[in-house]
Length: 370
Image (cartoon, rainbow, N blue to C red; front, side):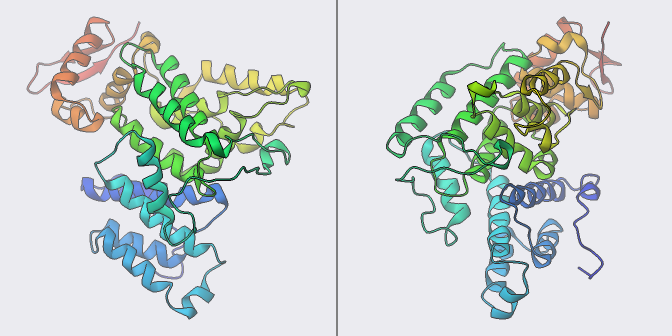
């Protein structure tokens, strides 16, 4: 990469024909963007290495080895912006590796494993549940802290929250209610804060993997470009100051999830979440609620789809972008069987939302609305 090249042109990779390049670029984009939750920046060497991997010149294992070797040199350590650039580089490569894997288990052990893999050799207690209580001064709270789970309840709370989520059935639940439920689970998981450091990045990776098991093709650019917003939204979902009229709210986190899962366009500015934004806190939350109800999307789903399930919305998003998509292609995108996709498309046709034009072989999908 030459001196004038200060960024990776991820948008160009979204248009390439080779799906593996798109997938690798998407993973790197998220991995690099997530470093912003702790104010970290990757090095130019990491960007060069990422491009080599995206282009298929090296494997992800070779990319990790190159980065490790790079930081064994004293001269290279001195050339980076600060001591935490090494952390940003190594964790970015590890996130990329995990996101590319097609394995996942919805368990506390999986969450712990992700933390260990991300921060091994970086944090002394990587992959270990914290055994002391913590507080953190938050900018979005004007210096106040969220009340995190007590150290002696972390394991039990993780088991309980994941158990409750595992029992929840998304079938037949409309989009609004499903996203509201997902954001509350995500906020609760983060509030437990099971590790000493690196909780937000671990939570983000865990949630992306989990959402994929639910059939979502997560829009990684939303995470990449708004990771600090994601963290602040988690803070606001777990903070209350009743004398000042401030209560826990997932409204801001819902904005993020709707942008990420449905492609809606929301105002994801951090300052709007600050507890001192505006003179009356309630007006800021009410404004957010109003925006969620009248969200502007690049390609609006039909009004009749307000009662669609998450799986139905995911299918509609795919056929919006590719009207000639086959059921096999749709199934691959959302991680479901062709039989399930057939059932979903039949249901959408019966609801009058989707129709097939010009037959099965050479036809296309059309989304209808009154």
